[in-house]
View (spheres, rainbow, N blue to C red):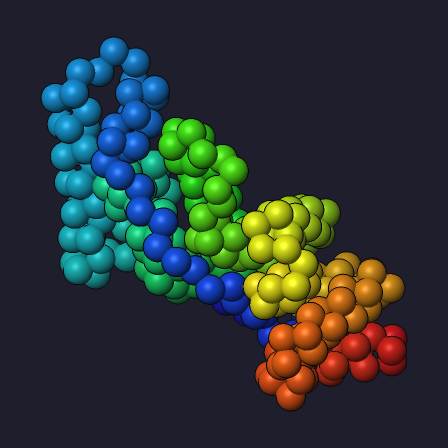
Length: 240
């Protein structure tokens, strides 16, 4: 499956992610909300069912039935997510197993749409977990990675407005959490600029890159790969 939207050779910079463990009690609360009136035993029984569903998915993969496994995932992604228990496990599962399956068994148009569905599900599921935990002010790093992936996935389906909106949301969350002079913020500015370039917002992209450049310099990263890539992109914009 070949990429369909040009990013002018831009290399996406990933944000570091720490584990965001989700306690079983949190999963239990989500199940209770979706299935009001369940007893504690019923909750545990439901979790056991979800684990069996995850096992069935893995059995399909081992049996060489990859397309069937992919279809099974999209019909049962909520239960499979519950079985995986943590947002980091969900993120790794989707990026290391589901997305490669999509690349193998879907054409470009269908594949990119399904990848958007995967990242959107991860986003909404992590948001639900944050609400259930009662701490929406603390944003898991894995949520920021999900937003980054989703913003670029939107570009693949030519949903430029959603791409910009999602990337801008990630920047605001980072600014609130880390300020405007952190490495993650600079890297996110770089990613945001690449999306702005794809949307032909060259003036805005140049401003984002110049801000990222200043942060790298303050962090004494002049000469680093990130810094040099930023300079290269600034020069590319000047030629447009």
